[in-house]
Amino acid sequence: MKRRMAVFLTALLAALAVGTPAYAEPAVDPYQQYVDPGCLSRVEQPGVREFRDMIMSRIGGTNGGIFACSGYEHGEGRAWDWMRQAGDPNQAATVQTVLDWLLATDAAGNPHAMARRLGIGNIIWNRKSISLWTSSAKRWNDYPCDGSPGGCHTNHVHFAFSWAGARQQTTWFTTPDRPGHWYPGGQPPVAGDTAVSQSSAVINPANGNVQVYHNANGRLIETYWNATDGWVRHDLGIAITGAPSVIRNPANGNIQVYVNSGGQLAEIYWSPTDGWSGLNPLGGGITGHPYAVVNPTNQNVQVHYNANGQLAENYWTPSTGTWSGEHHLGGTVSGSPTVFVNPHNQNVQVHYNAGGQLAENYWSPADGWSGQKLLGGSIELPPGMWTPGYAALCCSVTVSRVRS
Ligand SMILES: [Zn+2]
Image (cartoon, rainbow, N blue to C red):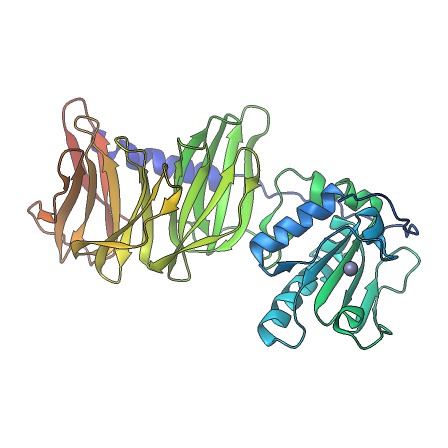
């Protein structure tokens, strides 16, 4: 039963991930004290920078700056202006997403929970202002202004932080693995997983963690293990279809996760210096789930998938740091392909269901892609109901069929 070993390990890791106790959130921060801002020499506080970078990477928009001696918390580097046009429905909708997320009452009944976790004490947008300081009414009021877009904040959102938030001392900053709903657009946690995909795992040498990724209830979940914390579950807050696929990029040490996000191939990665990126769409249409591998010959990160019935790849090259875009490799695919590096010849072997037959297309260091080859036999399960599985034995590679 050696050929079932890889499948067994995958199932074991998935079972361990699902068995993790529910994540207990730290208590929400109190409302913050107002401190009359002064005007320092040019400074940007680290919590404000982190908030700015998170919003820019997750939502987009234009940075309007942190420091300015304008009489607000900008003078101490405690405020950020996010340039968004109130008159543009798409831009206004992205602002509303962020405001709804910041000001929502959490599952434990705490109003303005995310704003409090971040230490945000005042927001001004589109002729309205809300103050969350201890002494404030904590509701939206009309904001008297001079009629200009800047003065009336119809061309930007102003976020002001307490000193604790600015110094990264509130829980949004001090909680090491934030749940997904601590990010704008993230989805609230649900009690218990009702649907769990096949998992994909990697060992992260940067922190010694075993990191497992899977789809639970349509969201990308990371569950990691280390000797200090045991198993820790982390909802990355991203809606996905099917199973994720993870690799460690040897060129930069990043942990890179590939997903089907609303029918598009997308990537989210963790870097040793910056932590998690936002979701990065790679273009191209995808059916089912992607499968990523590092090509040992050229260190390319190759992602293979079913692109509307065609076998496709998109690869990242270390020398240029860029993606190739979607390439079609020929042949027809039902369901999702799997990829394997043959340790005997360094070939990258892609296996899939081609019209009910087990098929292979492999890349060899000397000759490149082979084109589709049918391996004989038929597949009895309906298309999409199985994926190939592997076991590398001492002297041969066995491809087996596994229900997905
Ligand atoms: Zn401002």
